[in-house]
Image 1 (cartoon, helix red, strand yellow):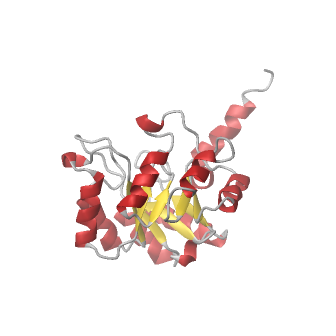
Image 2 (cartoon, rainbow, N blue to C red):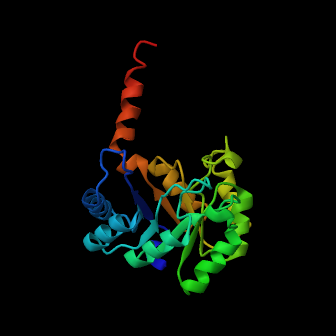
Image 3 (cartoon, rainbow, N blue to C red):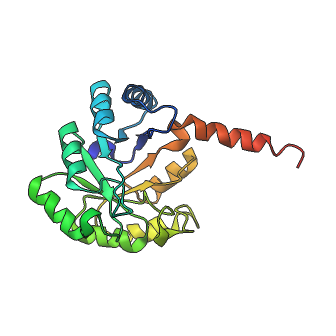
Length: 228
């Protein structure tokens, strides 16, 4: 997947409770990202991916976010979501690669075997939250290692992906053989450039580009500090 090497991947996602939730809007968001120089898109749901691929010719990292009662995992949790992403034509499929059990108490290693058996040659990205998970994902044969979930799981609580000049990412880079895709709280152009400088294959940026409610909040919270 040389198309995304040393480039910016823009995450175009809006959940059902967000103002921009719409496959049409995500398609236009992807087009805007392409015009701005993005080399790839990360997207959620079969419907959004189909629309995005209709509008732009960029590689798509696909996920399906879905909640299950018997598991905390919600990023591409089962084969049902894998099937949907394959039908949508996702170029890379990303999934939760934490140590937590999946729905049906399925371990990650067994899930990977199931995917590889059903879809030979599919490119898989590991969404990890800790150094240990990244190393394990590399051993399990993921094609890309991502830092997507750093700080978002109980195991990674308090960890910051950008602490000490991206120390966590540097440690991962030194310990895995597969390409590392930096993702998670990379909210400035300078941070995006830096993770590529230290050796990441590519970088995913989302909310700071595609979620106007979050961008607006940063401005309004700063304005409220007047007079402090």
